[in-house]
Image 1 (cartoon, rainbow, N blue to C red):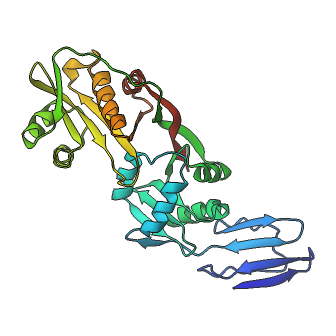
Image 2 (image 1 turned 180 degrees about the vertical axis):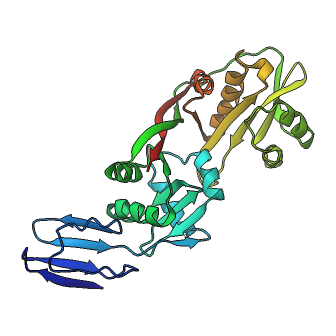
Length: 301
């Protein structure tokens, strides 16, 4: 419902959308912008408008249709690292169809069907949840704009590779790559060096056909991953892990190149990413033909 209150001092009308969950007292002497963190105030040549936003509520998950709308609004495919956090996060929904996902004190996803409300809604959610960081894909243009409008400071947290310019083929002596089996799980965990957080991740990838065991001279020395984590997308997240004893010898480039070539041969699109401080992985991906034109931005709230 919309109510209008005349402001005698200005001659303008104050329009109030009465969907706000809390009472906000209006006085004739109110300034043009009250500065309240729970409202968005703006002034044009015709009227002074205050839009009251109802609060977010915790939800098991957003509607699949709404989330699909968000994913389709992005210029590039979703980032797997963020998709993992979404799966572990807390969902918030709003009456206007907007939703958000937080993981701990980090905002990991936000979408509003009406982008002009995004800035106000972000601020309102912060009042409720108190998140201190927002992880935002640089090609999530509406969210980037809102974060900047709020004056949040961005730093580069990672590099996102969504283009592969060259299809490389590399040679590595006595290397073999085959689909991982259950008996490979323990040896892969033994050579793991922070690539997998839990041994269960290796088991799950092997059981779903997304893991490739790499052997050099018959010994397990690493693995490759090809993960089509959103079924109706042609994007396949690729990655690799190499035992510390064989690093900096070109094996990582060989693994990524071979997996990316297989993905492309299947008519799909290989994508990948790495942390901003992981210069070795960035160089490996670039040698395998990948180009980073996008970043994972970390906004300090």
